[in-house]
Length: 102
Image 1 (cartoon, one colour):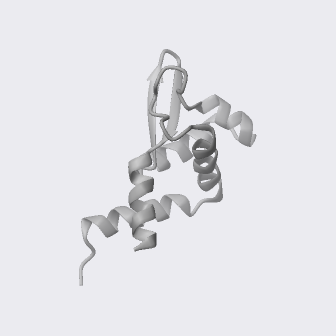
Image 2: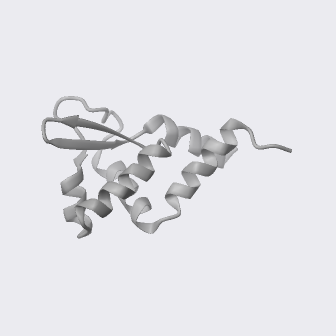
């Protein structure tokens, strides 16, 4: 039996979340960004530098973790000026929840 696109996407999500720092970053983003947080004015998410400060990690390390989370579809990032803002991708999290509750 071959894996479907759906299970391959879920596997990529689990792979990204297998790192404790990435899991903690996603949890932070989920906690600080409300349900409606989608880069609305005043609800821009967390900046990469703020995430690095909160976790006491190098900016390059945080950037790597965010890249992995973004590639797995778990977060969305948008650049505004010199800042990059990150929010959780609620659609992917909902699909993951559905898969787990199955």
